[in-house]
Image (cartoon, rainbow, N blue to C red):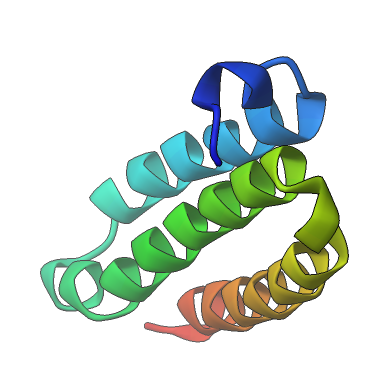
Length: 88
């Protein structure tokens, strides 16, 4: 079902991949405590964003379902990122 080579032609996929890379870089700057708590959550959510974008691109029949899932995971990511900004 999934063709990763097709996905790379879409700017949303490249943006999701960049989000994952930038999340890794940001988490690397966290304190040890936050790196292994909030950081782990952020990494997982960023991976989910890329995965859902890939599925949405490659599975046209289920695209709306993947977009709905993507909206939820992006909201979770924003919420967790907000916790990082308010953490000491």
